[in-house]
Image 1 (tube, one colour):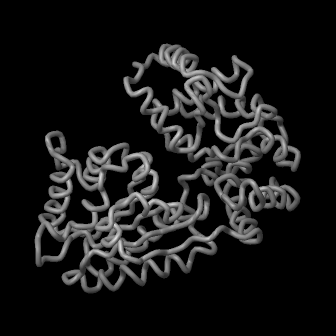
Image 2 (cartoon, rainbow, N blue to C red):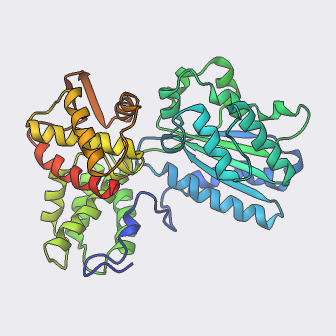
Image 3 (cartoon, rainbow, N blue to C red):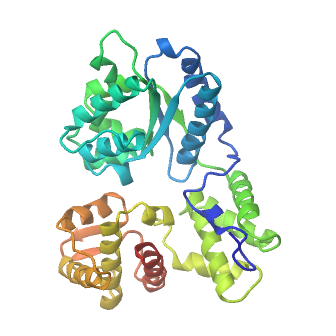
Length: 391
């Protein structure tokens, strides 16, 4: 959608946008296709294959998985196979095993009522529905490491990788599952049986190099901005910031820099984004918290984070106590005419697990990675982002 002199389509900088071209991830897509396309061609004899996509944040894992999902569905259609590709983000869709499986079922069909079902029964209903409708499914579980960390006693890997045992001797309509994680550290929380069922199918995503980052950002600039708005100097600066520490190649931060620098230039009446706009925005953001991190929070997570931001601003300190956050949370809920959650501590703990906030004690809670020197500028920026998300 047109957006004045600066943006041609600012949505092309969204973390949810999947570009037509994914530079430097063609090999990973090729590997995924080589695993699952032969199964499509011999679907009646296909047994589930489990694949792990492993790599640091901002290396294109999610985009690659979703793009592959679209391609494999097109391929299945040509082969006469009715395949559903289902993407599940465990941060968004799976606070518990019950919630994860309920949302998985809902993504397949609204026809299955999950109200009185146990998690095991949900998976069974999921499989039976696929069989009854002559459907096959390939499922991606993104942020699986986050789920395992926050739910160490809920053995979802065991549930998800043993669907063939529901009908011994028969093939499963779930032809495969893809698990996305930042590293293999999450394996340490699995029992030996779960590890063995996962297998050794690992596809690694390395950090992008500086030239690769520049090319990726250049592609997005072409889609998001009017011609000439981002010149070589500005693009080089954003690319250099993204490629070097502390960002270390996280493309999400580069996209955020472009987006907020464009907003700043537009608000100031410029028809170009200058390096100074980029420098100002970079001085006000925290590389450890991206737009994607905020978007992935549920409403209570956003409200509690907003309450923390307000508490920090009013205190002038890098840390505040739990009591202050609770008080501001109550005020914010009244402002937005919302009922305060009874899961306040649980939601706060979730923000800690996500690496968004840090808690030294009940009286020392702050924003991860934000120094006292630049905290005020960062909080102003974060406040605006949170308000956009909550309203």
